[in-house]
Length: 357
Image (cartoon, rainbow, N blue to C red; front, side):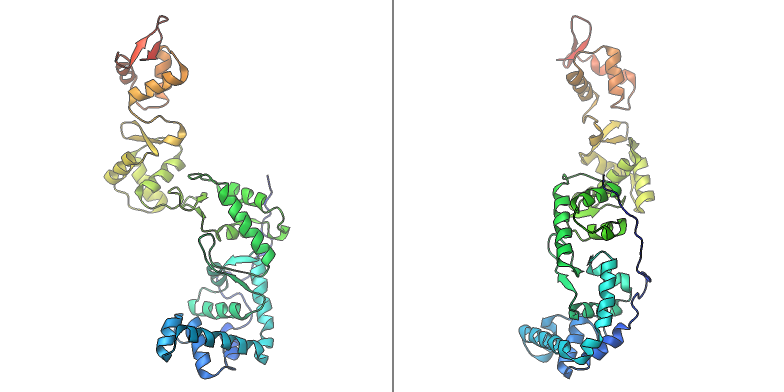
């Protein structure tokens, strides 16, 4: 099993601005070389003006009565002018600092995580984002069905992480749930060629969060993002996680109570009971008691359980049947014996043992 190193370093100021330069002042200096309209277009596109809202090409085009494509041309030309300006050369120290942040966060990081790590100020995040767009070291991967939008500085590393996430997903069965420690171990097995400096739990979690196909449920277990065991949509999904966490059958009133305590969600008792009845992940094992089918419980009434026991073990004595059925159902012994006397379904053989008809 692959070993995980604990993170040795952390970027300082993770809950606030963690760069030594002043982003707003630096961006203002870079924009100062542009004609007024070009500067206004970039300010609108990246939310660098008074409002942090980033405007679309179409919205800007309507303001200037020009096409979306013309706005794009102005934007690209303006960025090219900044690259040629003396002020761009003086910004290299800031770019190097941002590059260092990306390296410390794992070399490839989700855009939202990167910006939030540097500053929680939404307006200030726009200035950092603009510097990422401008800087030569930074590569952007747009969002698609597999990955979140992210930034990286090493194309080889980014390709390795993406390939490993793909392999990790392909190794997951539809409803499989995996503890985070095991998921990290599996991920490390996929990342055989990645440098040791990135092989720590913090980076692994950050890389896992890049995937849109792998997700984590409220209990910290990982699986396919589309699975109801991960993407909880309603009471029945929360009920499943609650019963699974408990590890043994629960009365539906207890399930409703656990949902409230574990997930801080109001779960009415009647609603919870109805959801348990309708969901085939649960098996009614007694009066109001529910277990998970994945634990090996047989669905159906007591008669069905007796038939399944006899099918699995062959002819059994009355005592053996009672013992095995009681492991499946929270019922009285008499209930089992009454069902066993139904000659339509069960009979004795010559040895006096019971078998299914």
